[in-house]
Image (cartoon, rainbow, N blue to C red; front, side, top):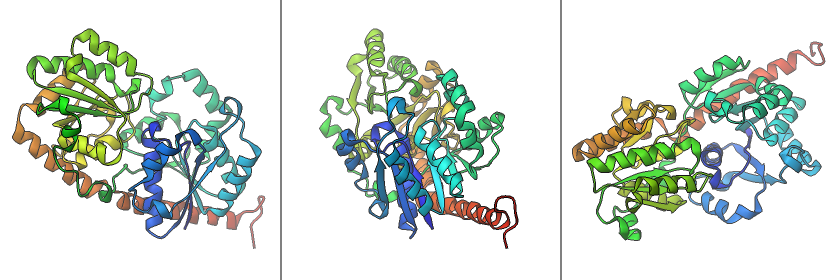
Amino acid sequence: MNILHVVVSLDPAQGGLPAVALRLAAAQAAAGHEVTLTCHDAPAQKDAIDRSLKGIPGIDRVHLSPVPAALTLKTIVPRATSGLLGLHVQHAEVVHLHGVWDPINHHVSVLARKFNRPYVLTPHGMLDPWCLRQRWLKKRLAMWLAYRAMLDGAACLHALNRDEADLMRPLRIRPRVEVLPNGVFLEELEPLPEPGSFRQRHPELGSDPYVLFLSRLHFKKGLDFLASSFALLLKRIPSARLVVAGPDGGEQANFEREVERLGISRRVHVIGPIWGREKFAAMIDADVFCLPSRQEGFSMAVTEALACGLPAVISRECHFPEVEEVGAGVVTPLSAEAVAEGLTHVLADRERRHAMGVAGRGLVRSRFTWPVIADRLLQIYQEVVSHSHGQTARFDNGKERK
């Protein structure tokens, strides 16, 4: 099958969107399909993008085709971009759009309808009520002017969890919704880094237990809750440390000011973005992973932490109930006290942490791997392509084809 994936950027600083699109495309290419991935070109991020591609199984079989970015105000698609995107769409049997609010997705959806190519759209949580409230007027206008047609024209919407599917229901979007999570490549993880290697590179941690936050430093990730909950944790476990890793998404300065105000800066280590094996080394040496987000689609960081055997304390808004269902961690209400209670529960008992780590590893290996997820999505692609061919065969400008 010829598959076209579309995502706004491959810059790893964009978070889970490029990581998911790349790995899904790679899993499908490794299964023998012809896969193209197109995105906005980002020459300034080329080195970071190249590093992020290393080690992804099957990525060498994916045809990466960046196109010039949209022009003024990210609204006008250049003619050269439009022509190249049109060729990609015509060559594809099915198109998979990642995200909602970027012109490249809307433009490709128009081309897909023009050339009678079915498309699947993964909102990646962007239609969650919390996300829709951010810049709500701009999004409401965009929905009315163009993006409602893009959503309604999809052959299928791909939700990452059941909560996301339920939260989209009030929008009354026409296509069917299929629920499939994100995953991991076990080949990227295994063999896991040797325990202690991250602590060796960060001797300031010593042998103290540490909480790991690994994500973009963005308001929606709940860094204000993280700071307050860690301050409460220190009153119960004074030896604890907090490692905050990830690219600045606009919230780093506010977080550091709050840490200073709370008087906990000596126990907090903001280390910037880490990728690849270094990321897994940080997870191996950590004692608990924490993500008190205001909203998530399906966190790659949480999934990777569980795969590394690291217990997780996450907010309900992460929409990852399996963490608590299988005993791999604690899911809490979004409050500083609740998150601190969850962290204390995990850190206070070594045997409990070990059991949670075993449960998390088992959960990911049994349910959240890219080959399994890619195979199910391929079944969905085949269904929408078959349906599209049936519709095209029956009707041509309103007349039945012979």
